[in-house]
Image (cartoon, rainbow, N blue to C red; front, side):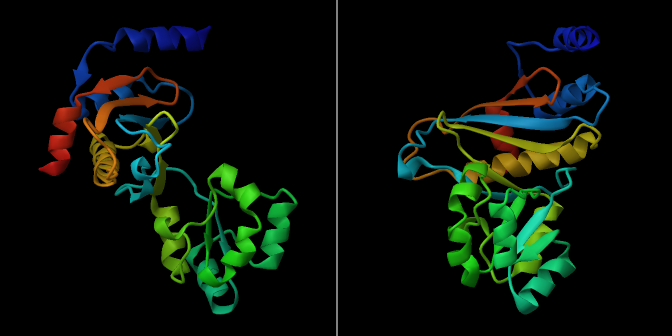
Length: 234
């Protein structure tokens, strides 16, 4: 009952027909994030693409300047000195065949998976387990690399992977409601900028069609797309 009242009160502050400037939207989302936990601020972008076509897929990685506010657990497939490097950088799980056995046994308590190129043959056997969860290391995303220390630090420091769904929508968490308004705005601009730069060759017509912002438990607000894109291009 209390949650319903809270949401009703939050909905009353939002104009469903209005396209908000970024700063006003962030202020509203922060103000409506009144749950008993630190809500995640989420962005949803509707793109003018059909991801079923290879030349219209949008996928990549972006480093948010102020991090995500989430604790990211990292698993690394590496041996010897590279395994030591991964551990020194803060990876929670590091190994080779032993790590593969744990994953096959259902131990999946990590959020990002990184591998050195020489171990991709081993990791490839885990495709059916890692793939559906979006955890398969990928050279294009910087998660298949010899530079495992940097990759671990990047994952823990606020790098966010994005991928368009079948309907052409990209979702991501861009921070926490406890972040300052400035920090959230910076993160959102970094994310939208990365999506803008990832425009595929096959995209025709309007690329970024709609952008909305919300907190985990709060109402969504539509952003003024033209003003937002202009602000990241400035």
